[in-house]
Image (cartoon, rainbow, N blue to C red; front, side):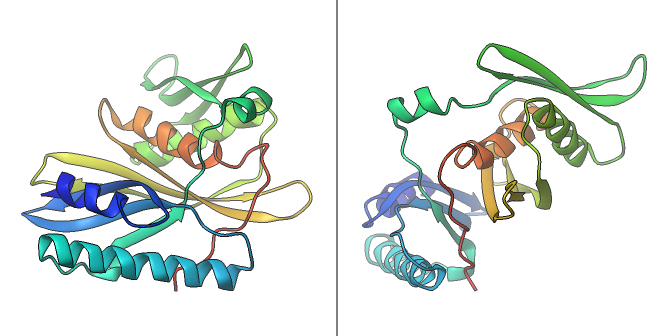
Length: 218
């Protein structure tokens, strides 16, 4: 059911990508990437609310399922553009793992324009956050700083045996502007890799590109 609902949501105007999480036969979370108009935060928030209403209506009409608007997260879609990638290449993940010797720490390796950097963080009982801070240190070696973790959640879908990393980070530019960025990644291999992928999913959309503050859904 989740894949069929995702296809329906992607047919909604302005929605470009969608991921639906199902749990015990019910929709647990919906993540939709949509084209949002330029304008004030208030105008963009109205647009988001309109898209949420359209998603709820489309799913009710085609699947007879009533979605809870609180389970729908709409974020701004950033289309791939080869010319822009040439000017603003994406940061790529090399590795992410826990190392036991010579000391217990989390290690993250990143690549950018032929450079390879490594960030580390002492291991604690929270491997997801350890990975985030190791990635932050690696990014600092590339010259990117100003990241503040807002939340980092691991969402479990027991019905589909699926886990997703949902990460929100505040990115403060050198000139003082702050953006709230959201990243999502499915845990396909192990948790550290998924955390780094979610982090890069968030920041690769904005670093080096014109930015806009993500509007609140409230």
